[in-house]
Image (cartoon, rainbow, N blue to C red; front, side, top):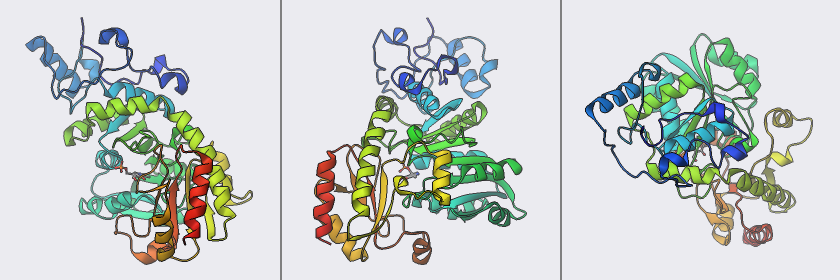
Length: 416
Ligand SMILES: Cc1ncc(COP(=O)(O)O)c(C=O)c1O
């Protein structure tokens, strides 16, 4: 008998609809003592049946798989473990990608992508606003390693992008859309055209909408990545990242993953697999509530502006992008409270059902104050120009009763 399970495979030829794949793909119960659900293989290392088998497994892991004739198996959990394949193949199915790889965190996934596909002297252009950790990496460590990084804004047109690229050696276009924390969209058609013309990779951070509402690979991206800590994990009880893309790119990312050690633990991979089973149910229900929450906030006298994709006005450039690349508005709502930091703090401290916390995408509703509660690497004037002002609240709508959520927002706004 061969090894239990198999090395990561996207199981492309076995794919069905993601709703079906979410509960079964990438796992064969017969090879796991008939256990309906994947057991957690909480072990750091695997025993070889013989020295010859160990040799073959190493050849398979470190050389091209096709050259490793015969059976392959597990060696060491930093390289691979049986809990990775179910999560990875199900994610690949969701993202319409050939394959996927999961990581210790969203930043672990992003760092692995940047280290794998950029070299000193290369240029990466990235969209703003973007998650603070990503901006910090682009402006700091990546530059220290000799990569040239330049940013562009969500309203950039092709002429603007060409001017930003100049005569740089463009190797990567990195887009976060919708952007954290303002929900601004960037046109992936435009980004894909730029990447294509320079033979560069298009990488999209799809954390905010999840593959339920946006499929970047269908829209021209080479890689779609996630903080799986958010909607993919969905319960605020795991930290993980994910990248979906073509076979060669994902194989290269797996090599980076075991070289630098950004492989998630078996328990984390197992928990993520479990969470993907309910991804659509959670995201759809959270989105239905978010549409009502956004509508309520937009009519409230203490709220000056609300940013939710359901409120985009027809005829605007943002609405046009939404129509072309999103299948639903998601459950992230940003809004400006009349006033500034003091008013926001009164609102946040008065919340009851909604919790004051910095993450998003979980079953519970969370609100945060991006002006004071994100990495302090972006200067204040730049934050303001990106729409991240002292009056901004970011709300992740959870699965609680909509009536309770609206009542909580209403009473907290009276405290402002
Ligand atoms: C859009 C986005 N991308 C990436 C990350 C980083 O993910 P993680 O916290 O899992 O490292 C975050 C975290 O908030 C995020 O919001």
